[in-house]
Length: 202
Image (tube, rainbow, N blue to C red; front, top):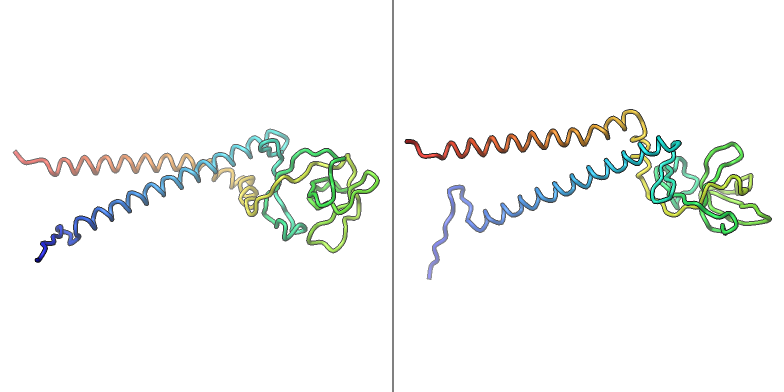
């Protein structure tokens, strides 16, 4: 027994057309969600950086100070461009294998691993370095202990902290809103034109 198959005027069978439309709708929703997430992340990071500028240059998140790794002395644990979250720590509770952030005798901020605790001093070493740091860490130079780290984000933060980066990040939400409103307006105009074209002539 033969069955009667049909095609619409575009040469697509009805069930195929329905499946295609569902895929398009799903794709639009995914793009919309991803755009919203990206926009939220941009606004959140921009807000953190602005607060950091007000708070003596310190970017804080959930009680931890966020710092960008500028060298590879702790590779492969974390590389240049990572961020580390440094939380407050009691000097007497620091133990070997902890990763700490401190000021070296030259006043530079350093993040290295503790390899020995001796006589009230912390001896440190970068994972990628052959030898220990020359000067031990004393209580007055300890900033805190690394709670966690995230790779690559530091590059974005360093860009965002620049004048150009700050301008771009502050402008993105505005551009997105303007473009989305123009898109909605054009869609409404097109729909109205379609309704007018399909009205029966008197």
